[in-house]
Image (cartoon, rainbow, N blue to C red; front, top):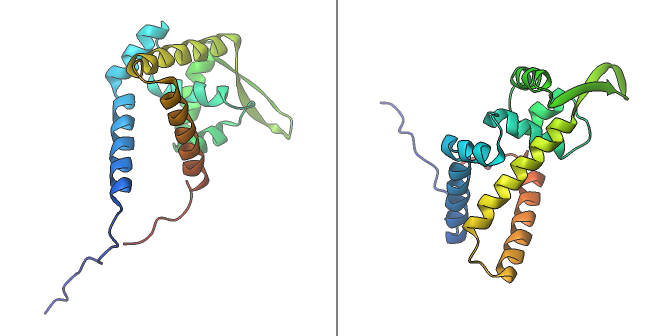
Length: 166
């Protein structure tokens, strides 16, 4: 007779955690849709795919960076980043520079065109957020910004923590 498999009983999940997870998933879905990306690119006046935008925004938020570091930050394979960087370099958005810590390695940084593209993307994105939150009071916006900043910092802090086994 085969042994029955049982599912371990897990501790009840607080209602607020259920709601937060659902809302984060919904926002992630809405902002990651191809249609939303197309609207963002139309507003910014650019023709970049989602992967290129993620790479440009990530480089803009740091010093020149090694492609392998970008891959880790974006949780993708290094070959994916390398392929994207070739296109961005060909189109004049990024350049490769020597790594001061290792002569054999290279880092990637934005060109003036890349900086301009990121600013246009950020402006278009802020316009979309502004439209969605136009009716919010300034105090509510300040509180939301603070809570989201704190949440993002905690997510980064715990990104590599092991998940509890159920």
